[in-house]
Length: 237
Image (cartoon, rainbow, N blue to C red; front, side):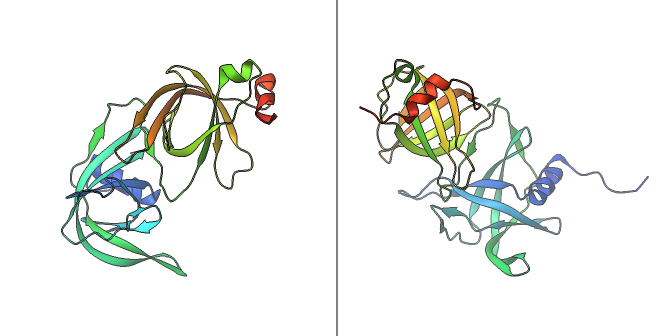
C-alpha cells in the first residue's frame, strides 16, 4: 500500500500527453471571421496539479497571440483514444525546452474533465501546416493501361490509420471510388512511400481549395506492382 491518491482518467491522460510531448489541435473561442479555426501546439509541461504548459499555437509557421482568459478547445490523439477538452489561458511564459533553448509558451488551466470521442474508429490526425508533406496522385486504371499522366499534386492535410486527406488547389477529375496510386513525399525521408487506395470524396472548402479524401490505403512494398509503378518513371505523353 503506497497511500497514493488514485488518479482520474483526465489526470492520467494529461500526464501521458505531457510526457510524450503530444501534439494538440487548438480551437480558439471566440473565432473571428477570416481566421483559421484550428491551430497547432504541443504539450510541454505540467506545473502543479492545476496548470499545463503548451507551446504558443502556430499556423503556417507563424505564432498566434492568444490573450489571457481566452478559452481554448483542445483535441489530441493518445494511443487508441481521441480526446477533447476545454481550458482557459492563464498567462504567457518562456519555457526552457532544452538547456540552450527556450520557447514561447502558454500556461493554461488543466481541465478537470476530458471527453473521449468514439465517432471515428480511426482518429484523424490533423497535419501541422508548418510541416509541408507533398502528395502525388495518379489514376491506377490509367497507369495499368500504360497511359502515364502528369500527377495531381497537393499537400497532406490529415491522416488516419488507413486514409489521408490531401489539400488541392482545384477539384479532381477522377470518379469517386476510383482506384488511385498515392506517393507520400515526406521531407527528409530516405524514400517516398507509395500506396494503392480509393478516392472517397473531393470536397470544396470555404477558402477556395479542395480536400480529397483517400481511403483503404495499402503500402506497395518494393517488388510489388512493378508494371504499374514502372509507368511512374515514364514522362507523360
